Length: 270
Ligand code: 13P
Ligand code: ZN
Image 1 (tube, rainbow, N blue to C red):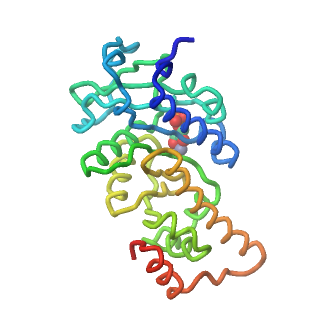
Image 2: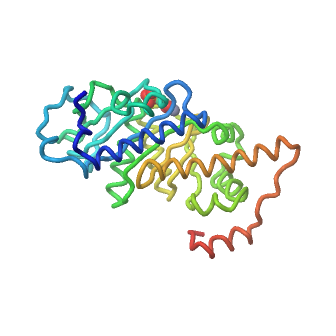
Image 3: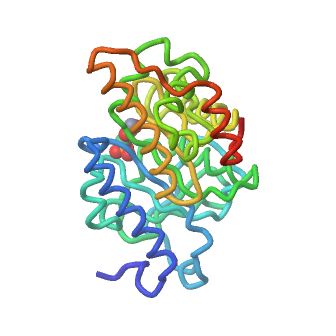
């Protein structure tokens, strides 16, 4: 089949990373049915020929106006599509979209008429925020990591940085590879504009990963593999916590002095 990925190696490489991560999400058990979504800002790989290609949908409203996204292009998982299917064929379960000049609509350009994820407002609002900040981050991931979601069912872990502190203290790699910790977004309706706004407000407290209470995580990074890695190390820490509890004890955790030593040694934010 004719695909926009043909003869566009940089774009193809970015989308192949999406397929790789979609496979991991399924293997991890974080992507039941259509659970989770991915978007990647691929504007850097869009050439004149692609720009001249007619969209295959009319303009559709985003629900918000996002001034930095004018003429930006995104790969988006399709709504209702399964990660396990995306792993095999990302262009069958996702679409390339362009944000229109009014910054309030998008059009589907290729390969197929796949409607983007229902969490598009959160993803696009976050991309707009990242560009406004001058961030190099281009990928965003929403997924349902079992142990991290389980934590949010106890108020204790919804206190600011309570979960971060516990997770960092389970195994040194957590702080080293998720040095900004885990922000908390109180429960809001999935796919709502309110959820999009709260996600940005929380990311802006200098987190790369935020928890949507009783739902899932939302993570950003330079590419989708790095966004996945941050969630993976956090969830590993949550699994260690759960394993210790299942063995019948509350884990001691690393001490404050050990965490400080780690920050000094790896030059991490305090
Ligand atoms: P979509 O299938 O619309 O991407 O929704 C999945 C999801 O996890 C919603 O929060
Ligand atoms: Zn979800």
